[in-house]
Image (cartoon, rainbow, N blue to C red; front, side, top):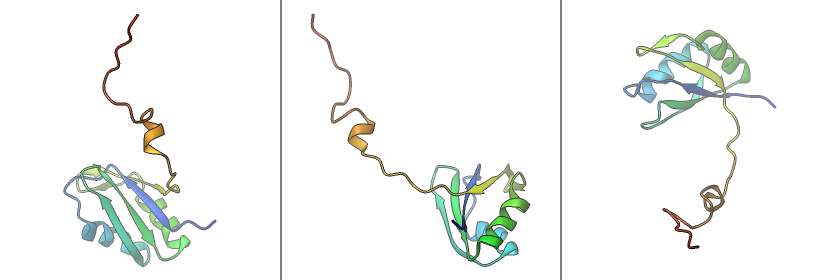
Amino acid sequence: MTVSKLYVGNLSYSTSEESLKELFSSYGNVTSVNIISGRGFGFVEMETPEAAASAKEALNGTEFDGRTIKVDNAKPRKDFNRNNYRGGKRSGFRRHSR
């Protein structure tokens, strides 16, 4: 499997998708950038796996917008059932009667 999508963590909340694209474009063509709002991380997709590997090696652990960023291969998203994740449709506290 060739990886061209990178996870970028520890982003400053003020980092823009445009500035992140500019940073990564030094290592190859950037096809997409998606910052998860209010979470401090995002994803950068490079045109080739070689460009992604080069960017990962060069940028992981470097400072960007005042933060030391973490760059790694993006992992495939796992589907999960929210109802099972939260223990079914129950919410709040349950009282046990004796």
